[in-house]
Amino acid sequence: MSWNGFKKAINRAGTSVMMKTGHVERTVDKEFEIEERRYRTMETACNKLQKEAKGYLDSLRAMTASQTRIAETIDAFYGDAGTRDGVSKYYLQAVQELDSETVKALDGPFRETVLEPITRFCAYFQDINEAIKKRNHKMMDYDALRSKVKRLTEKPSDDVTKLPRLEKDLAFSKEVYDQLNNQLSDELPKLIDLRVPYLDPSFEALVKIQLRFCTESYTRLAQVQQYLDASTREEYATGALDNRVEEVLQSMKELSITSLGNVN
Image (cartoon, rainbow, N blue to C red; front, side, top):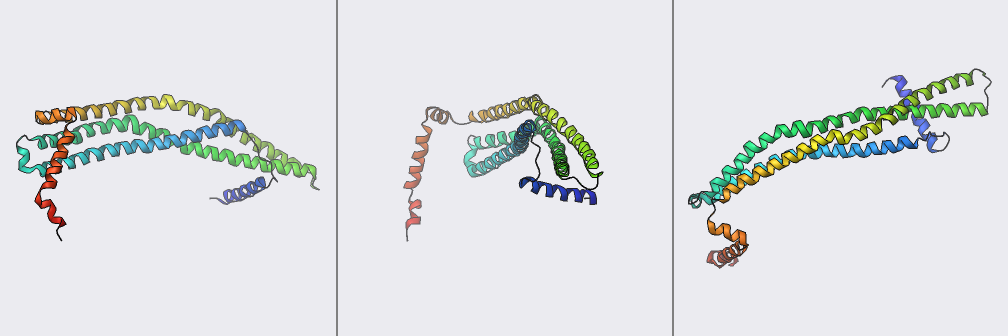
């Protein structure tokens, strides 16, 4: 920070304190405050959307990778017992293809149509926040000069040139503040209104990508079902599979080996 910048920061800090104590009257612009609140709401929502969009892609990769590891473990768990119908290997193949083909095919389109447009939109916030910060600084400078002119008008100085100089500075300060304030007051509502047409294509792409992933997941896993024996498919359809599982668990409990752990 330059020396002039440091002095301005100190002066503004003093002005801020005097505003809080009521010694300097603060400019109130209700219309701008409303638009700034709307902008802050949009900023928070868009930053969250960017974070969640990236998280969705990461979660998609993590889920299919986890499915693959589960399938590998199941295939190893079945061992030779799974060679009768090969269902564990078909399941492993299905989830491997889902991980290696479907997710990788969706990665590029998701980044291009969803994640990158949202990221570009969020990138504007830094410049807008700097403009709002500058506007607030210029407003504070204007209010400080306005207060000085008021005090000098009420208690004139022996230096007759002091008041005209301050009034000139005040007029220039007001011009700078008004320019920034008017620009932001005009452009913030336009930016907020643009959020919907800008994000519409990304929202449509997101729905289509999710639909494609769910459709291909269903198609690949439905193909595995044909390798299950007919009785298992029927029991699943009728809800009798739960009873079968309970029967197997009961049979496991009846094995004498399971009672060895209770022997002291």
